[in-house]
Image (cartoon, rainbow, N blue to C red; front, side):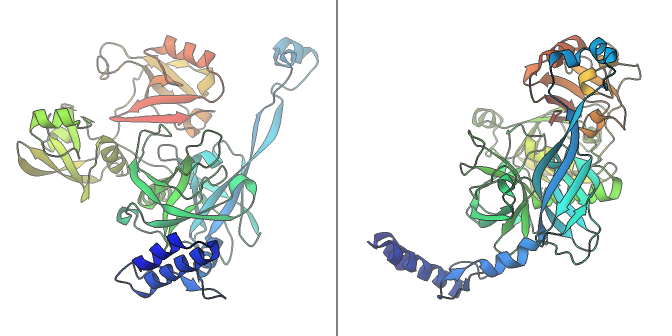
Length: 468
């Protein structure tokens, strides 16, 4: 087989090189000891290996999603003057209809459940799902989770085809994958590549980050579409790209299927993701810190503080412990720990193992509800309609621990709630501009241009939500 690949490299003619490469692929399919026997390569009309049968099998489960929302129209400055509008008896808020396009994946044919990205359907008044066979159905939003950028839709349609969920924890860098979606509104499109990296974090997309990175071309419109293994299993929901010009440069990111499954289960059960807290703070291990502590690994989450009376303290955790396993899964770092704990519903237990002074210990902690916000009324925020914020004053549990504006109340029927704000959140930045109190928050919101990115602390987690 290696000889065939070498032959493909030195052939002077492109057709000959292609033939040699195809022969090599055929050999890998014929000898399962060399490459996984699950490779779904079939012979086409000319005896050349093809993925066409696999693609024909899985693509009916990938759908196009279009949304209709209302947004304030760009108007002449005079039309934004209330006196001018009252004088001419004009409507208070002229609006226009906007359409957006994305993708989704049917994961339960009987119930009509469709997975997509939260940012695909955010603010939508109408959601329409178009199947591969061109049938269209109006979708109901079951629920959404801005923290993982996952949303669940439901359609009432017969003869649906669902894509089975795979185990994304079994992925390895170098595994082949297919990306299926609706880039640029062109219609269903299939691209291929490999898993380039696992556990990507720090992208500042939403907050709970544990992305699969792939070089399968992903473009605008692919959001919410399927990342599929060569076993024909859904192993990720395509979510974001890095592209200076807004197009694919071979760096795309997908939410792992295991995260999407856990989020979907909570949304179907509760209508939302119920995240609690353990009451601890952690940090990354650097080589210097690991050497100073006598730790031989850089994996794990180093505990830097434990709240008195918290579930973490009752479970026996102390400052300096290194958490290495949660619920049977290895912990790579604080972001990985945040994701794993953040997917456990309030009231359920977390099992973990940690290192202390060269010994490996075990513990169990029950996820507790988040700390309640101050009972005092806050100040209304026009840019965050439905939310009230307050300063963190002496006597509050958060005083002296963090600086920012405390979200005191959020109306459940408001846009602030729909966009992900919750009572007890502490807003510490707007568009990466640091804010330490309500006055600074208001100033940052008033001067913000374009998209509005709000960074906040929720319990022991940091979350970023996009407001507009």
